[in-house]
Structure formats: C-alpha cells, structure tokens
Length: 360
Image 1 (tube, one colour):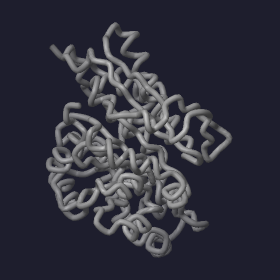
Image 2 (cartoon, one colour):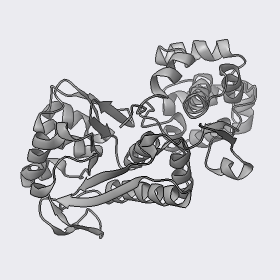
Image 3 (cartoon, rainbow, N blue to C red):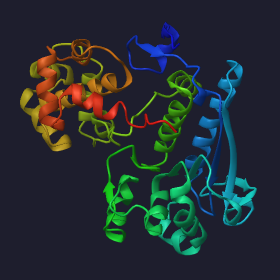
C-alpha cells in the first residue's frame, strides 16, 4: 500500500514554498525490475544533454539500493564507433557499444548537437538506427536537437515533437510533416519522446524515473541535484520571470523580481511605481517597452506562472493554489487562466500533471 509523508522544512529549499503530500515509493512489480538504458552519442554531442540524464539515472539507482528496493538502471553508451567520443566541450565519453550492435531496449536517449545539420550528414548510422529500432524501443527519447534524427528517419511525421526553441524554425523548414512544438519542455508521441534544449533533458530523465519507480525516488534525485521537481512536459520553456531577467538597462527586470517576491500581497499600480521610485506613467511606459504588457498584466502573468507550478507539483485545492499565487479568489484565477491558456486551472492540472504517467 502506498503511504504519504509530509515534506519537512529542509525540503523547502528546492520546492515551491508550500507543504505538500507526496505519494511514496510503491511496492508494485514495476518498482522491482531493472531497466536497460542506452545513451547514443557521436562526435560533437552536447555535454550536459548526456551527463545530466546519466546523473539522474545514477542517483536513482543509488536511492533505490539505499532504500532496499529492487530495480535501477543498467546504462550503456553507444555511438557509431566505439572509443572515446568528444563532445562540444573538453569532455569526452567512452562508448563501449557500437550502434550496429545496439538493438531495442527499455529506453534509448539520443543527445543533441549544436551543429545538428552537419551531424545528420556526418553520422547517418544514427538515423538508420532510429529508422530500424526506434519503434521497437519502449521509450525512444531524442534530447534537444536529437529530435532531428527521429525526424530525418521519418518516424515523427504527423507527430508532435519538441526541440530547442532556437532550432524550431529550422526543424519546421526541414521537416514540414512534423508538428514542431517550440515551447514545450518535452513531448510524447507514442513510444517517442522529444525534449527542449539542454537542461530539459534532465527534466525528461526525472519524468522517466518517476514513471518507473515513483515520485518519491524522483524527488530524492531532484534534491541531490539541487533543482526543482519537475518542469512538466507541458510547461513553457520560458517563464515570465526569466524573460524579465533578460530585460535591458531600464531596470524593469529588477521591478519584476520585486513583484515576484510579493505575489501574495494585494499590489496596486501605485505600490509598484512607489517601490520602483518612478511615476506610474514611467512604470507603465517601461513595462510596455520591455515586456509588451502593462505592469498589472505582467503581475497576472507572474501569478499564473506561480499557480501553474502549484497545480502541477502539488495536490493543493484550487482555492489554496489561488491564495498562494496571489489571486483574490479561485474564480479570479479561473478567469485569468481562461484568458491566457484557454483552459481552466482544473483542466490545466488534468492535462499536464499526468503527462508521462503511462506505465513503461
């Protein structure tokens, strides 16, 4: 039987600021089976897209063993040719399995590359493997621009695929039959999974751990890596706050950070202008220039971002989510979600909180 535990105070450093109930590791049969994972690399692969998922899987196996559970991951590194494979940095990984010897397994993860079009021409063996074994693999995951390999193999025609936002236009142009999602953290199309850029590979690997061995193990891994668990597949690649941190020299980014730290307060336009030390007119002009929206509209975006995190990462009631995100009521939150996402908060939670929950 699954049991629940409450997160202690020490857990709040890597979670949104709330107490939640978590379902602990269950004793189902899927928790006792070891899973085979192959990481496909080639000269010029992106380092973090390989080492990030490897760390996630390694930590997961350690936690399973430490807690006395069976299961874990048997990881191998495959490449068109065996030996030391240089990445896009000074790091190299040793591939002990040649692609010609790699058949279908539980999970295959294909790293991306900065110059992906050049790699497609230089490494046709990767494309051939995707065409021959992609559909036979329980989970075939392409990380970042690794989705180009699946698209080149023709297995993503008519399917939704995520990739790094900066490569989305190129992918659409080269593969017009693929439904490219330039915003999602990761996406699933049957046995195929695709992710956004770089760190999104870690989010996807955490989703696999949660799918295989439960949320509690995935949460422990996220804590080891000092990160939030987890950006779900339906989450945007960009938050309002991240966009604001890229603002120019007008200082509006600092105002945005100030607002984000006070979402639980009933902020008015005058409050924000006073804190910024400028007039309401100057504040409005600055926000419109930097963010394309008024200060109050931007405040609503921040509150929606906070609400999305709470909806997807907790089981809190909608009224509690609305309160913690700074909305005056759950009805006000519902109207904001309808305006921005054409979904109610309840529907948003149902659609995206279950992403990746299918049994492997």
